[in-house]
Structures are given as structure tokens and as C-alpha cells.
Length: 125
Image 1 (cartoon, rainbow, N blue to C red):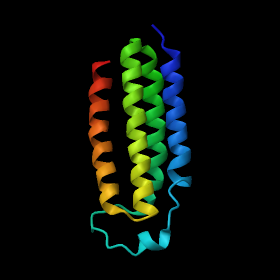
Image 2 (cartoon, rainbow, N blue to C red):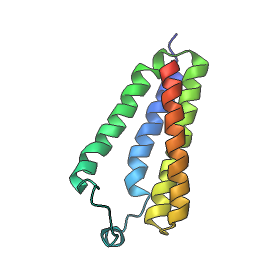
Image 3 (cartoon, helix red, strand yellow):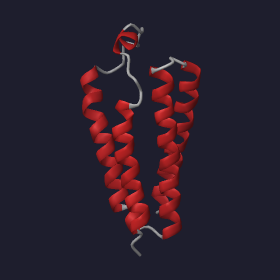
Image 4 (spheres, rainbow, N blue to C red):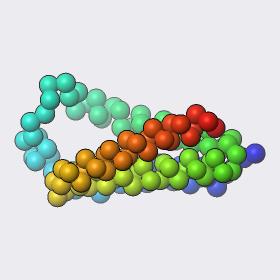
């Protein structure tokens, strides 16, 4: 059974996430560049490659899994994705704009937990 509404919603969420993730965070490169970072942090070019790949894979999941899932499961996965996106954007905003590191850490921890929940939901589909 095709569930186009959750599929289109999933795709719209991923596209909005991609658009807002860079524009909404008010990135201050001077502040970030001044932070002490661990030696194992990958170079910036890795992030430039991985973020578009991340968004592309999220779209692929939406187009292949959610579209063919039963309606309730498709909406569950889409809802979990939406909450995860809100938390991920909350992390970026909290981290880069007011530099509220504890709030950013809480958003990131919650987004991570939801990501694992989303993996479980999609695996069941």
C-alpha cells in the first residue's frame, strides 16, 4: 500500500532540514575556529562531503522505506524524523548562536536517542 502523504512529508522535512541547517544557525566561524578540538576530529572537508550524503540518504530512506510501509508505520517513522530534525536544529542553534553548550548537548543527546529509535522503527518496516 503506497502512502504518498508520509513520503512527501518525509521528503519535505529532509529538504527543510538541509536548507535550515546552515542558514538558521548563524554560524560564527571565528568562535568555532577558536575552540580546542580533539585530535581525532576529522578535517572540515569530511563534513563538506558527509552532510550532503547524509541528506541524500535520508531522502533515499523516505522514498524506499516509508512509501512502501503500512500507513501507521510510515507516519511513525516520519514523526520520529520530524522530532529528530527539530532537536538537531536546536543543537545547531544552541551551539553556534548563543553558545549554550549544555542546551546543545541535551539537544544532541535527545536527537541521538531518537535516531536510534528511528533506526529501530525503519528496521521493523
